[in-house]
Length: 337
Image 1: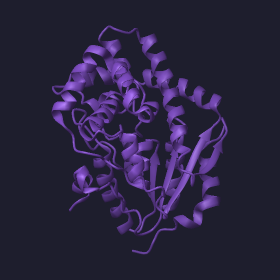
Image 2: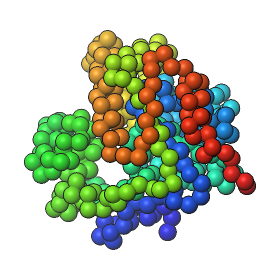
Image 3: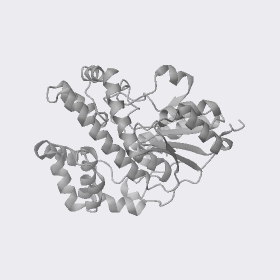
């Protein structure tokens, strides 16, 4: 049975997502909050050791969603091999199960060629899946999902979130009221099993991480992180982010539910549809980005083995790369083929 089939195995079998990081050389995970500078540090570091980058980002997988997801330029990706960028159309849904399947294949390929692997990004759920495995629960029920989405049209995602708070307060506390996809999934699991998804996830949580993963975290002071967030949003707007979203809306197929959850795209869609001024959309994107950073910090605290490097406002990515090389360089020697 292949990786994706294992992930989609029915709940009743007791199956859970497994990853294969336990074999072969260590995999380095370079993680941090959105916009902290981890990508720039990785691109300064990875060529020094002859490694390759596997993106740990749920939205960089989408083609033509470039500016808003902060993809490295294509020319740079030709010089430094990147994997799991531009792999699906914006009209396609994308899941953590599919991510693990593709990431495992990329990691295995890089290892076969004897090169160090760097998994770089900040999507906490994908990190958890790669490190601990991820319990998927029962398969999707299209009828339940349609009904819940219809209800969301009437009462809003906040209304469904209030219902989730009654049946699974633990899940509701960690799911944002605007995250309709996860709210629907949690309610769907409760309807199908009669049990909270938080209970089921805890039951199947391994409670330990892969022993061969090196976890390096980059973090900044809160004020510095927020300042970078504000600059980042304005630079993306100046780079043509609004035009990028306009072009996506003009395509023959609509954006998928998962693609629409990319940070900032929903706000710019509302602006282009006349429901928000550009200034208001920009401010909402800044607020949402700060909330995401806070949620990421909370998630990362779960992974006790992260070795943190603190970044200063004036740190150059090359200087940070030198510090990491001094500390970890011996672990990144290419393996014999």
